[in-house]
Length: 326
Image (tube, rainbow, N blue to C red):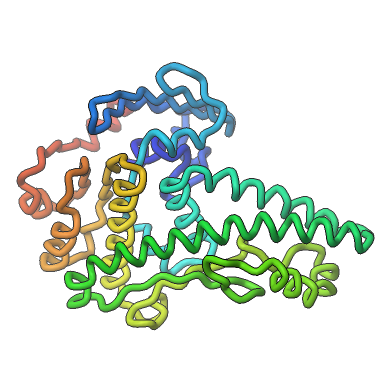
């Protein structure tokens, strides 16, 4: 499951580092995946990693930018670890939503990288003496890059909330009203029309604190996302079951957005996400994924197989896998 997801994103979707994916007795790993889209076109993707250096080939052609994967393959991966998106630190929410936006808008990757590059240069500026002209120059570039990222984030959250609204009848009985909003750090959220002058003023008000700690204290790299249940923070007020269903609903809404915006049908990977759900909620999840996409469901629970008796079943013998070194 993780290998399929990795071949579609170029990184672990389970918050692993590449070195954690290499088998203990080897120095590298390689994944070869053959994809076919709904029109019958095929793409052969070869991803390998050695000493933290990745090599990507698409149809045997070396590709320098991993971001090309986001234009070729769309994968939506769900696992029990996803609850960290709600319960964990803001870093996990930023990672999740940045990946989601990259799948929907591949150009977002370049914009965010440009922002991070300018952030590093601005932080270097704050570590030395500088003139007012230098500060003004880097503040202007910094805010301009930030605004580009903010516009994409606003657009994505609007699309995602609209898509989640389609699930409202199914979800409200067991979860409640689900919503997602941006939580900026150091400035007021400005929606679709960020104000450069207001952001400059926000930087001016913290300039002495930034100089003292020698790093940027305001910016989209610090922002968080609020996942709410009936307008209350789900992190604090949602049950474990509600949180798991909420993440499934968010990822299913995202999958539908991928299909609608990019016209590429995503592959759905359910990696034992049903383990802690009762039969009623499992049936709810099944209703949410009535779709034309390719679906993989991994579970040690035989009742899951019976519920999805229309899907072909592959039984994996873990002892045999270990013996064969698979």
